Length: 98
Image (tube, rainbow, N blue to C red):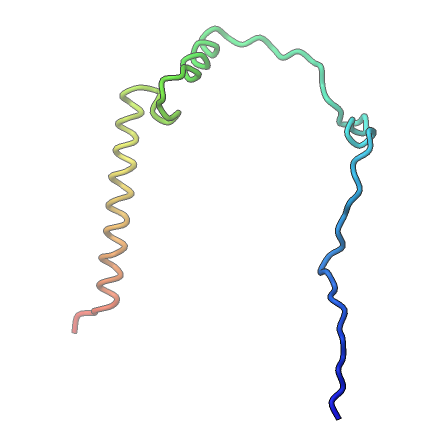
């Protein structure tokens, strides 16, 4: 005789529907928001920060000028050589010399 067993679908975890209270949003007081003033920046640091904030459509890793471009090309070259060498090793392992 076949018996039909109905199994109630159970969620794997309970859904949490509560919201945060005002006290939880404000913090516990021990690690609340700080209103301290920061130390003044040096002039050279402020100028560098302004230089990197200029909206000139360059990524931040090449905003430093020609030195950054040289470093970018050297990094790309080293990565390309590494990938080619990986394929060379794979080929040597797949077809060993007899």
